Length: 127
Image (tube, rainbow, N blue to C red; front, side):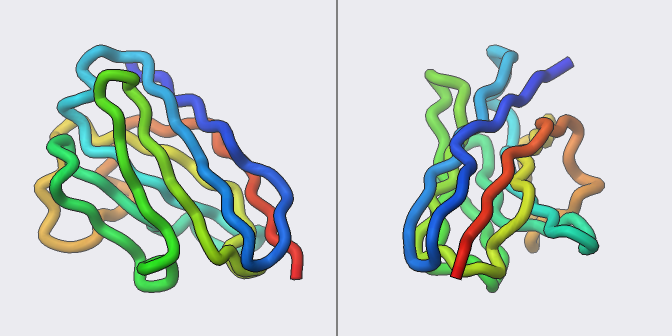
């Protein structure tokens, strides 16, 4: 079992930045692909960004490309999401997810490819 705990959410104004963190409980974290998804009220959970176990390959949804950056620190068992130039449409609960298979994705991964999920952290962007 892997526990994932997100932090760093909050209320910001449009154009500001936030950095989300997700801490994992297992030493085998370094072998997992990690991702961030988000879910806005009344909408389905959607992919935001992912990073392979090696950190060399990343994936982004078109809506966040060039604004968000995913990174990881395997020694700290933590994955980050740096969010810049935030927009009101970025308002959602952000979830961290882990894929124990490492993430050899040919395209942006889907929810079904992830084995463990955090409880989420709320991000609210006011206009």
